[in-house]
Length: 415
Image (cartoon, rainbow, N blue to C red; front, side):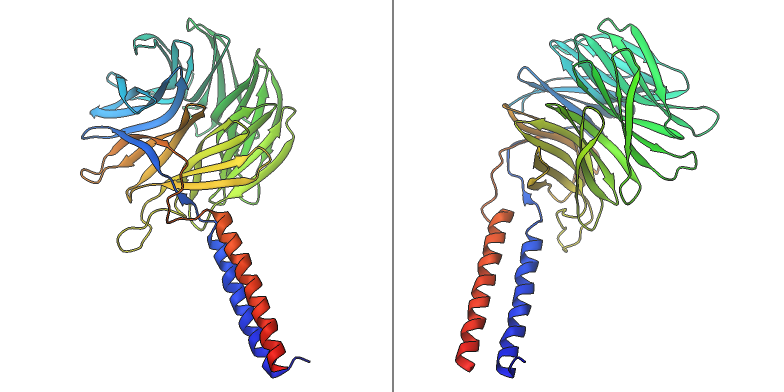
């Protein structure tokens, strides 16, 4: 039986160990991103970014602007130092939105919607509109576009006029804008087209599926061949309803990010549709991904976090910040970083390569409370007052060792 003299320091040691352990857990909070530059685009009304692509020294951003009253499609080109080289808007009497972008040499392809039609546009490198195509069956919109060997693939959603049934739609065009084929997929009830990625002529499509009663929502990944034949499909649900947001490829694997139970979910699949691993990330509030990229053996996810957002002057979390997650290809978390200035910020897209790491999205302005587009370049430097997670871990371990040694010393002196 422990003596009273030993029991007291032991109890104190346990309490201190719990405090040290809590320090290790709190160290999982993200560090703050520092930037090489932060640039903004917008006027007196809403300007929003939805997607971004890099090519040959330039970053292309698409979204929409309401500077003319209605939503017009927006296309911006920046150089890698943050200079806006040109901007283009496309609009008429209705609403035009740019949701996805892909660049192939001197050709820029933007996919989105015009009123109730799916929209695909081709621009030249100087921003000149070369052609535009619409596809109409019911009520459609495009979410993403991908290009391979002068062939353009567009994924989106088609909704029935007569009920609230949604189908995933996949279309293939040539570089002149001729539609080669289109296919639809509804899963076990309804399906939404979320994103698309390619490995050569292998087409990987991300979808969110649900029953016709709008319940039991799941993430679905589908593989098509270049003729539009479905090769396989697989679903993932987790412990709660789930939604797919973004997909990319790296090597011989497919990486996708979604949301389940208000947390970001990263999933890795092989080319035959088998799940390799899955990783959750998040806190106590809403955390959502928007875009994903693979570069140099690392997986990057941009999104929005409510769990680790910047508090206001009263210490309250009232608006989300940008979250940037970095993993290795085996699923180990390497770094979580946030960016924000106390306003509402949505992280929508990223571009990562030997040219750097660029993030885009939109944020509420402090003056007129409209959305403005932002583009930032991160420099991967941790702010001096914030230590990365591993240093906190080392400090916690050292504190535990000191506590144990002190407990033993006290015990020997009181024995």
